[in-house]
Length: 176
Image 1 (cartoon, rainbow, N blue to C red):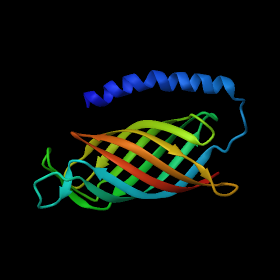
Image 2: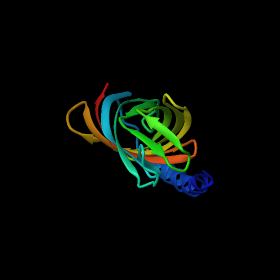
Image 3: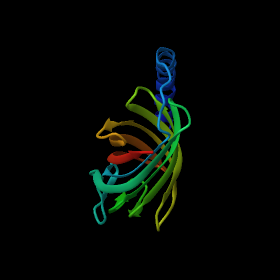
Image 4: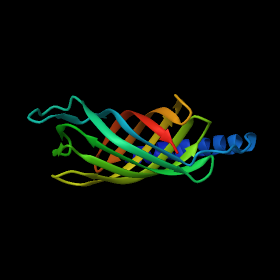
């Protein structure tokens, strides 16, 4: 966890500098405030393995979810990212079993370019055995596929009570 915060402290000044330069260089355009869509992807659990195995080999769990973002300003927004990991696995170091874990997060978002968004926030992972707090840090890129539609691939890191996961998902979103 301390390693994540050290990395964050190094990256944050660069992101803020990039944001200030980008804000100064661009003019405000009219924008649609809402974006909603289902998503599907995979979550990589580095310390995870199938139930019954004792060595951590890493595990890819299929994931489905829903994303909702609200843009307060053309550059700033907030959102909800909810997902369910459709697998049963154990986390070796923590000796924790997870089955169909549901991750619910609220995030703040910064639009770095017209299509690239950075987000971070927190939430909870709800599961029948135990619940964990979640810190999420991620990036997404909107690919316009129609007047109000976008294909949005995203990658994010979740820091959960004692272990981390990486997720890659693609959302088919509607701008409202």
